[in-house]
Amino acid sequence: MGRGLSISRFSRSSVVIAIILLFMVASISGCSANNPGQTPQAPQEEINATKDGKTVYPLTIVDDTGTEVIIPAKPERIVSLLPSSTEILSALGQEPIAVTQWDDYPVDIKEKAEFVFEDALNPNLEQVLNLEPDMIMFWLTSPEDTNIIRNLGIPVVVFDDKNISDIYETIDLVGKIIDTQAKATDLVEQMKDKEKVIEDKIAQLSEEQKRKIWLEVDSSLYTAGSGTFLDEIITKAGGLNIAKDVQGWGQFNSEQIINRNPDVILETYSYSDKNVVDNIKTRNGWESIEAIKNDRVISLDNNIISRQGPRIIDGLEMIAQAIYPDLFDGK
Image (cartoon, rainbow, N blue to C red; front, side, top):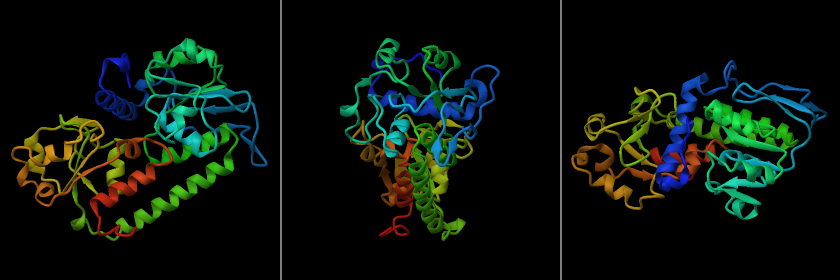
C-alpha cells in the first residue's frame, strides 16, 4: 500500500477505495512492501509469551513485516491507526486512546478516544508523541513510511491479514499482547463456530447450483480478483467470482461483465452513492444479465465485508445470505 496520499485531497469514496486497494495490493505483493532483508510471516511465534494463562513481559513478537517487536510491559495506552485493530481491541475489552476518522465501530469509539487522526496514512507524529502511547497498531505500507513510525521509539506492531485464518491468528496475538488470552480464545472459537455453520450450509450446494458473482467496489467497475481478501469471502460464501481469472484488483468494462453474465451483483459503495443499485439496474445493455433480470443487485456494508476484524464472519454470512437467501432463510 504505497502512500503519498493525503486524505484531505480526496472524497470519502475515493479514499475508502484507495485504502481497500492499498490493503489488497500489499497482500498480493509479498515482500515488496516489507523492510529490506526481512521475511514476512504471520505473527505466530512469541518468546516467553505466557505463564499460567497470563502474558509474561517483556513480550517479544514478530509482526507481519517480519520485524521483531519488544513490548516491555502491558500496553495500557494504545494508538490504533487501523480500524480492524480498533475493533479487535474493543472486542477484547480494551479501548484505544486514539483512532482514525474511519473508525466507526463500536459506534461511539471516536467519542471515547482522546484523539481522532484525520489522516490514517500520514498521522501527525507530534500528536502521536503527545499522547504518550505504550504501543501503536499500524498497517502494512511502504518500509519508509513504517520506519517513520518506528523511529518514534514506541513499539509498533504492523498487521497485514490476507485471509480469515490470518484474522484468527491476529486476534490471538492481540490477546497475548494486552493479556486477554481467554477472551481472544473465546472470540476466535465463536467466529469459527459461526463460520462452520455457514460452511455446512454451502456444502449442500452442487457446483451446478453455485451462482456467478460480480462484485463492484465503485462505478468505474473495479473488482476483486483471485488472491484478494474479498475473493476468499465470495468463495467461502459459495459464490463463483467472475473475476477469478484476474490476479489481485482489476477493472472491467461493461462488455466483459455482460458476457460473463453474473447471477448476482454485489455492490459495496452505496454509502457514497445512494442510487447505485438503480444505476446498475438501468445501465445500457445490462438488461440481459441474469442478475438484472432476476432483481439480484444487492448492497453490502463495505466496512463489515472488507475489514479484517471480529465482524468478518458476519460479513461472510451477509454475502452468503445475499447469494442464497433461501438456503439461509431463518439462518
